[in-house]
Length: 106
Image (tube, rainbow, N blue to C red; front, side):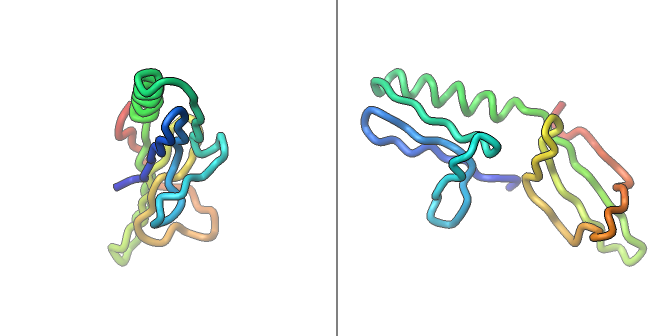
């Protein structure tokens, strides 16, 4: 799993965005794709579907730092913003450049 997003419906309005904790609270900032809408159930369903579709169509890149001990570090990010979605391993703290930047979804 690279990241979690959720939509919270409240009758005539909805809030959507990146999940920030295990209680499914949302990051309420535009940097994390926060989305707010009001309308009928049908309008909200349509707007939220469009929001999810735009989120899922964003290009993702896998960034890799191989290490000699075989414990590689990898993170996945949105290509256009560099927002990190998930990390595996310990990313070098010295700011060293990754060995590979591979498009996962162009």
